Length: 423
Image (cartoon, rainbow, N blue to C red; front, side):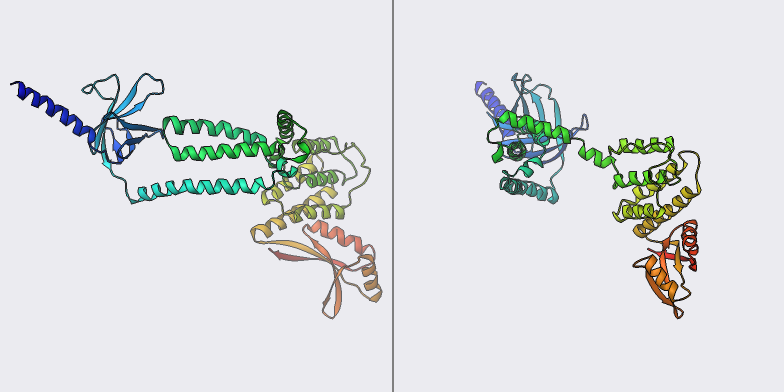
């Protein structure tokens, strides 16, 4: 009877030993109780669990069990392998027959794609090393150049420590993701080098300054430049020229109103552009329509975004209506500049637009010479056995007629022709 009991006890111990020696299969597992899903990566002496939250748990095979030491130091969490496709997780204060935390069963093994991704992850570590070298090599050769030092943000370099250190600790102490830990170490080395370079530590002219002096100087310079990018993002392309256009437009009727000054100052402050004080009343210089037209064309030649150019139309209209009175000159200018911007938009987006071509038709040789003397480099075209001169293309009929009137008053036969301009 005693021998039978010994054999029975030995059989139970042997069954537990066999259960512990079963190798758990890698794959996707789920819990029938709480419907949780996890990913298992298993080898002979280690099992890694990736939870649905993205956290990773590593169980090492010690003393016949897969265990993970608790960070609190009050014991460990253990993993009991029931079969190659089933396991339980329990705490160390529970005995072998106690209630497990949860039971997980295999429902899908890794496919070919998973194996390919695993191989790519392994090779990515090697690529990270090469990437680290290339980045460091490029800047290391130029570490003594002051402009290079000033081009690197010291705050961004210091923030690298704040973001990389917690991930490094998590990879080493919790998830045991050593490939990721290597990447974070490389990142910390880069952050260190970039911090030193951004301080100007390697610049020869800074040799007499101590470490903390260099650090404070770099932080001070960073503070003064911290809003440069934000200002550039909020300030439209060619903002200074837009202010000049609005200023000249305000003076086009020989009277600058308070409302026009307020509008110009509002945009100048918003875009952080310093402008001279604009006096209310009669301007020191009356705006010339042709000069203002050239300024608008100069702005469009800088190729602003279509949306910004379209917004300029609204600004021009706001300026013309700011004093609740739209003069003939303002209406003419608004019509012309609106047409110019519409032509620019049609060029960028495709399409056509109506315009007006002003031409002078000289009646004799004397008028021909007079036109060439009056408008140097004017374009001449032979048409129907004679010569005509193209003064320019305009986008407002009123504006074109005003130009015609200027030359008609000089005794020159002038007319405007409606034309269609393709993009």
